[in-house]
Amino acid sequence: MFGFVSESYAQIDKLKSAFIYNFAKNTNWPASYKSGDFVIAVLGKTGVTLELKKIAATRKIGAQKIVVVEYSSASQINKCHILFISKGSSGELASALNKIGNTLVVTDKKGLTDSGAAINFVLQGSKLRFKMNKANATSRKLVISTTLEKMAM
Image (tube, rainbow, N blue to C red; front, side):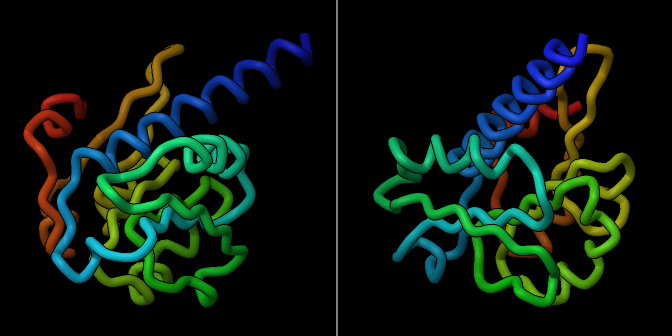
């Protein structure tokens, strides 16, 4: 039984990572974010970090190399394109929002799109879905593709 549980968590982490990669491909950042590395930051401990690093090893966003950085505290956050906040670190959302610029904030705890996150993962039965608050992305000067909008709940 325990093996099944850890396998399903690992599968969910893979799915979340794939979603985050697709969020990156379907979001347009201001010009100042289109050079250098494409930085995906992860706040808190999560298996998603390892899966994102696997993606970063073989893929790019446009011409930009993907770099995954981990933070244990919102106070450490630097310039990044995407900030994924794990469920365990969701209490640091407000602090994180004060540290970022044109960043797509993705969270893992229900209701955080009402508190500043642009995208929030939702487990609906056995399916991983996501909610979107486009206004929170737009306020950070990000343009979300209509394709991504249509996929949201």
